Amino acid sequence: MKAPTLRERSPEELAKTLSDLEEQLFKLRFQKSTGQIENPVKIREVRKDIARVLTVINERRVQESA
View 1 (tube, rainbow, N blue to C red):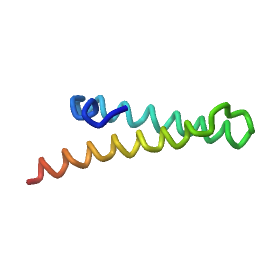
View 2 (cartoon, rainbow, N blue to C red):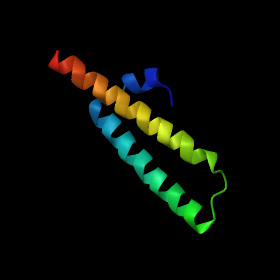
View 3 (tube, rainbow, N blue to C red):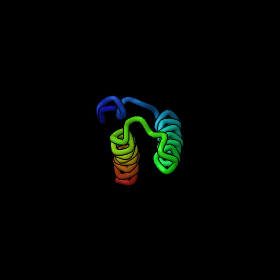
């Protein structure tokens, strides 16, 4: 997931994407704790995607307040 594609999304879509990614991260962490995870690198990728979404959301907040 790239930042330019995230910037094209509406605030509602960003919120939905964020909640989906957080749910996915929870499931991956649960799989890791039970030893069933197939690709442990996926956890890092999802965390970075969450950070990207939060960055875009915060950029918009700053633009609105300025």
